[in-house]
Amino acid sequence: MLRGLTTVRFHASDLSAAKRWYTELLGVEPYFERPGYVEFRIGDYRHELGLVDSAFVQNLGKHGGAGAGPSGAVVYWHVDDVHAAVERASGLGAEINETVREFGEGFVGASVLDPFGNVLGLMQNQHYLEVLATRTTARSGTRAMGRRAQRRDPGQQGRVRRPEQVTGRGRGVARVKRWCRR
Image (cartoon, rainbow, N blue to C red; front, side, top):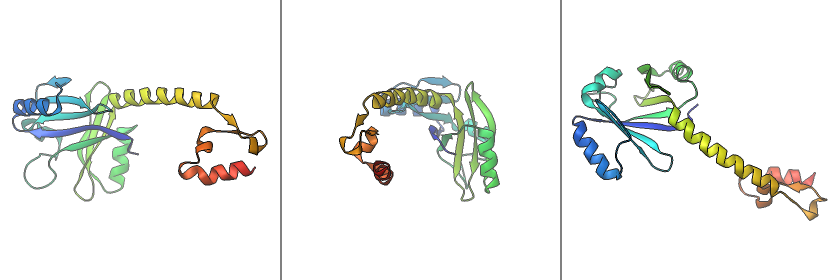
């Protein structure tokens, strides 16, 4: 169900100071800003770190960020269908924290409180899909090269062996051995 990290959201009572501090810490300017919200893209996968003005947090749901109960960062995980993910989590005992809503074009999210009081963010995130498409395209090229690089194993009566079978790494070793015995 969880596909990957999309956005980590931190709350700040002084958004301007938080923006300056994180700009200095990360060494990059925010790539997205609107009143009450600033967002950075960081790391190898360009994960998103969002800063929201604490004054707006009460508008997001039960996650008020102050007092008893859940507070702090909300980590959003990419899912293929936010509504289905919320329904599944609710069916397993989670309580809806932030109802499903559109954050912007290509970004739909919600959060739930798990039975243990943790906030779990769920999001369909266009940026995640763009990064995934880029990586999938790169891997497809590698796979195509791998097919061209297949080689015959002289000890296996001319059978073609896939590169991963030649290396014998990982859990596939038993499968490779069975394949080679054929």
